[in-house]
Amino acid sequence: MRTIGLSLRGPVRAVTATVLVLLVLPAIVIVLTAKRAWAVGETITDVRILGNQRTEQDTVRSIAGVKIGQTLETDTLDLARERLNSAGLFADVNVWWEQNGEGVRVNIAVKDKFPWAPVPTASWSSNNRAIGLVFVDGNLFGRGKQLVAGGRLADVDSGALLAYRDPALFGGWAYWQLQGNVQRQVLPEYNASFDFADTPIRETHLTSYGFETVFGIAWFRRLKTQISWGMQQYNVDHSDVPATDTTAEMPAPKATQSETVGVGKASLSFDFRAREFAVMTGAALTAYFDLAAPGFGSDLRYWRSAVNFERGVKFFRAHNFVYSAYAATGNNP
Image 1 (cartoon, rainbow, N blue to C red):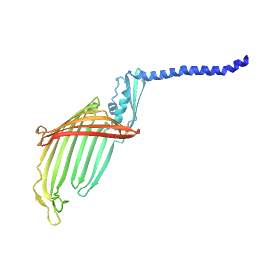
Image 2: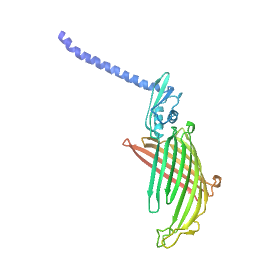
Image 3: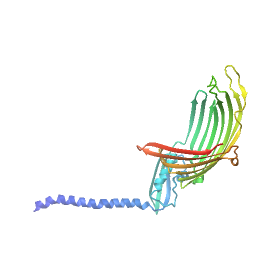
Image 4: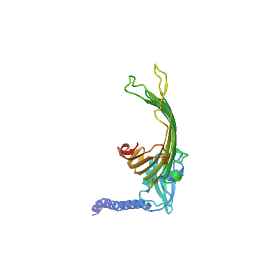
């Protein structure tokens, strides 16, 4: 009998251990799941920013849209991560929560991108040679402001551009932009019936300068309404007949006259796009309306209406396919 009792002790222990595992393991899973669920509905008592070196903490909080006193919802952290990635300021983003007193603390860890870069440009063609330099700063003052300044020297079209954009005015949903430009152009005209069809029969020299100011609101960060007003002055300096091997340069009647173009613009956009590591997903639908009229300081009258749709699809985890459709109509007498 003693021998039989000893032979059953091993299987009994194995069965007992199996039963304990089956009873305890689900309990552990339930506890861990409950712990994750406990955070939903709790109050955010602290927001901690980690890893930022160039971007101000207030700017990171504003972009993430997470505030102390806010209730933590099931999608709060995912939305914050999406907004930070879409801002284009950070190379890496991580967002998580932890218990903090009677509420939860949201931790936001970011790695800043290098914010500015000089971009040289150059082009060459049979009738135009050009060099230029563009300076871009995507995180001005460490507050996410954007600045573009550049110039171009060319045979046909030289110019300069300066633009400033505040994507979150006072840290809110409103944004604004101001840009100005100046350009000098040489516009050649050709006559295909001449023996020398590649030689201009007249060249018109233009100088233009202008500005545009933009103001918009990103309602709930998805619905965007925008208005803008811009003016551009076109001055005809002179027209002439270019010199050839047998003739000298001669004055010619002006091809056109100087004009001022003032345009008011309005747009409505439903933007559900998101960007992560330069991969864009989601769709955006935008409707535009432009009107040039004396009320906007314009010598010309015209209107234009357009609709644009764009959608991005991610495939193979790190690749992007973007397609778009555009339609427009208008009146330009």
